[in-house]
Amino acid sequence: MSIDLSFAAPTCPDVPEDGHSVTHTEAARARAAETSATETCAMDADAADPSGCDTVVTDTSLADAAGGAAFTETIVAEQYSDHVSLRDLIADRRVDAALSWLDDHAPHRIADELARMDAVHAGLAFRLLDKDRALAVFEELEPVDQQQILSGMRDQSFRELVEGMDPDDRARMLREAPATVAKKVLAGLSPRERRMTAALLGYPEGSVGRYMTPEVVALHRDLTVEQALRVVRAKGAHAETVYTLPVVDGGRQLTGVVEMRELVLSDPGTPVTELVVTAPVFARATDAAEKAARLMRETNLINLPVVDSEDRLVGLLTIDDAVEVIEAADSEDVARQAGTSPWSGHYMAAGVFQLARYRAMWLLLLLVAATLTVTVTDVFETTLAHAAHLALFIPLLIGAGGNAGAQAATSCVRALAVGEVRVSDLLQVIWRECRVGLVLGSMLALVGMVIGATFVGAQIAVVVGITLVIICGWAATIGGTMPLLAKKLRIDPAVISAPMVTTLVDATGLIIYFTTAKLVLGI
Image (cartoon, rainbow, N blue to C red; front, side, top):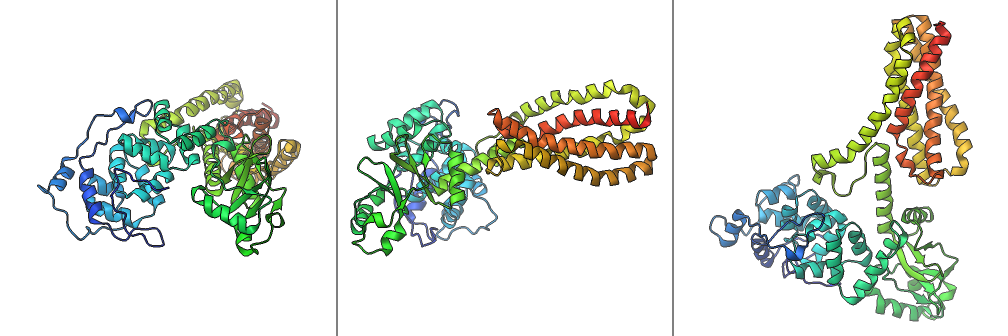
């Protein structure tokens, strides 16, 4: 969709086949000078309205560049090495070099650089882009970074940018936007775009309906190949993809799919019904987006038809959105397993206190849980008094047990996520992980007994060896079981994170250690 962004250079640079600009025009340079005096007001992240922003942030150095008082633009772009980042160029007021950098890099690389910047510098850099690349870069950004860019834009630029986005990308941004921003975005859209965006936002959070594209070219099952290609030519420009073409009946119910490749290679008079794949793989709009995305991976699809409760076609889940869904789910799982809360946005743009806030809650919970270890040690104080050397091996034992449990928990959470393990496999997982833990414990026991015999004697070494076998078997069993039980109770398995399993195993491991010591040593 063609748009004319007021902040973009009026003339688009030449773009070769690889999508990178090779020259920047005099208009782009003029726009770079104008950018120096453009308002770059920062909107409050929770409730501010970009339309009401009156604060103007003016960089005097860039303003001088525009007026020619203290800085003269050169015809030849300033030389820069590839390791210099866009953030450094903008911060150093090297506008000519920043233009060259933007011309030489793909949209996804530019988006990554913008995500690393604060609101003011990101806004200045974004305004140096021509109109077509501005939209491409904007769609590569995470929702939180898109809101940052929008916060410094004037009303006309704001409306034109969000109007040019694909409906699914627009809905994805609005999911995390403050209410005032969402209201402003919807109000500025054309009736057609507003209807599509509102329809996507009407589906449950995390469902396929929130991620699918409603801009689909659907073919009636009674068409011939020639007629179908005419439909594609007439409607394809407004669709996000035409590689997979759903085939529907008169009631728009999905009856199959046909690939564009099949249409192009077939005789024009061939009925579409001879090429269609009946009983296609599809998803309901209310299904979990992660489940649908992993279904695409398993079936090697690039587009997945999405239907409503009456099997009527409502959209397509495209491969780019499916990859983002899986990446987001995996990122959340990794964060949970590491004992932290997931956050949106770029790591390098997150503040110190922001990162600390996401991690503090879990650390506090684990600190409270760790009091179990203190309690156990206090209960067995008499045992320690009779054999003080037992204290030497506490870190070794709880470390080995905690790591064994964390390994089992991580493996099980991952297996659940990719569908390799089901809740019904609970007993098999328990038996498998128990044996794995005992094998690992036996291997570690040989080393532990050698260490124990070297430093404190044979009796303590036997205690250490037996404890290692039992602890590792117990830890692996607990680590593999807890995620499955969490899934059965409809709790996110990743919440049963490795640090939580480790803390539990630490406390129970000490009980095993001191109990074994009392039995072996007779104290």
